[in-house]
Every structure is written in C-alpha cells, then in structure tokens.
Image: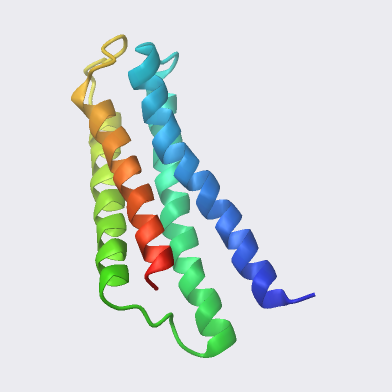
Length: 135
C-alpha cells in the first residue's frame, strides 16, 4: 500500500467533509429560515472551518514528510490559498462573535450572518478548485 497516497486521500476526505459543512450548514439556515438550534448550527460551522484549517495544514505536512519540503505553489495557487485562509479567518471570527451574542436570530433566514457565512464557504470552495488545478 502506498502510504503517501493513503495519507493524502484521508486528508482529502476530512477536507471534503469540512467543505460540505461550511457551505451546507449556513445554506440550510438561509434556505429553511428556521434553524432548530441556531447555536448548534453555529458550532457545526465552526467545527467545519476548524477541519478546513487542520486538514489544509495536514496537506502541507504530508508533503513535507514524504518530499522533505512543503508544496511549491506560486501565482494563482498562492492567491487562491490566500483567499481560502481569509474566508476561513473571517468566518471563524463571525461565528465566534455570533456565539457570544445574546441576540436571537432564529426565523430570520435573511440574517446577514448566515448569508455571509454561506458566501464565505462558497468563495473558499471556489478558491479550492483554483488552488488544486494551479498548483
């Protein structure tokens, strides 16, 4: 068994589940307008972004382990990675602020928080495609 490919594949599985979470959970709230437990959904989104950060770093560590260096990316790939990191950072801050807020947003499906979280997830996912194919 090729351990390098296994490590990349398992990291990709985690990364994919994180991506699904950061896009689908906010879209669920926007689409239904009725999160059963808004704070639970916010924590789910936070977990998704944490998985994105961790698995993204793990891609680099796997490369370092097997090649002795981090991936050599440049140009569009660097820009795409920067966009992904910016989206993740803004989303984590927005979720943290929302979790600390005492103001309920339930049944306001057009709440800017959920729309921004959905947009950040979609932008990051789009940037991921550019990162993948331009690196």
